[in-house]
Every structure is written in C-alpha cells, then in structure tokens.
Image (cartoon, rainbow, N blue to C red):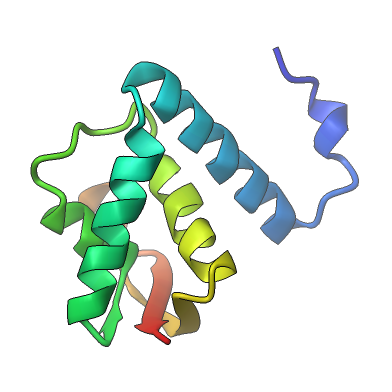
Length: 110
C-alpha cells in the first residue's frame, strides 16, 4: 500500500500525473501490455486528428479492454506529451458522464 505522505511534497498537477501513472501500471497488471496497446491507439488517433481530447481517443479504442481505472488514459496521454507527439493547447468541457462536465485537456498533434 502506498503511504499518503510520499505525495505530500507534490504539487496538485504532479500528484495528478503520479496517480495517472499508478493507474496505468494497474491497467498493465490487469490486462497484459495495456499501456502499450493504448499508446499505439493514441498515436494512431493523433495522426488523423489535429485537435482532440483523451475521451475522443477512448471512444476510438473500441477493441481495447477498459482499464480498471480510467485515469490510466492520463498516463497514456502524458507519455505522448513527453514524447512530443502532442501538446496541450487548451481545455474543453468533457462529454463523458463520469467527468461531470469538468474541463479536460485539448490536445494538438505536433
């Protein structure tokens, strides 16, 4: 079990990234090679769409098993950002019910 005090020094954004990475690792334990499969789909989607959200990619990924925690998709998006495949260009209201209309990142393919 992870101790909460390990994350005390993180900013809210860093904490969100850390939790997305943990969710991605959990998805890989639940479905073999889930992170790589999701990343490949993410990159394929980005090649045919100039701007999009991660929820757009999730809707596109119909053949991929759902991860145990949807934050795993955050780890995939962060990997694409770190690899300079995409960049954040703004925020839009989410359409997915589980996000409750909150803002989500609008990505742009580099």
